[in-house]
Length: 162
Image (tube, rainbow, N blue to C red):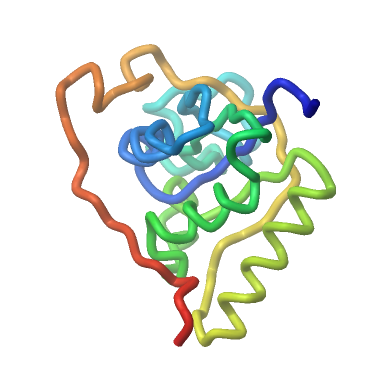
């Protein structure tokens, strides 16, 4: 029998809708939104929005690896946003990034990014080691669910044979 749960961390734009979409994936146990990849301790939403902390809005996904593989989550990540847009120039708050918690996650993410690049996608997604994840303020957690908002679906199957 496998481990109970594992964690994955993704950044790809506003974290509210991305947490909503990840929460609908079978095998995902929980999501929480926050900030990672920056240089300030305990950043607030207002500080991150200044684009001076280096943080990105991110979603921490807790999942049951017996029900959904990390590879499937990374593929889903690449489908629910456009990874070819360079958002670094906007201060990095909305950049596309995968924050890996293990060498295996690093290998999988790097391999899938390379597969997309081989298919002609100019993927800008950064792949980094996970660092401190600062949980966002309560008002940002389950934002869509708490307000009865269903985000507009954006899903492109970049894995279909071309």
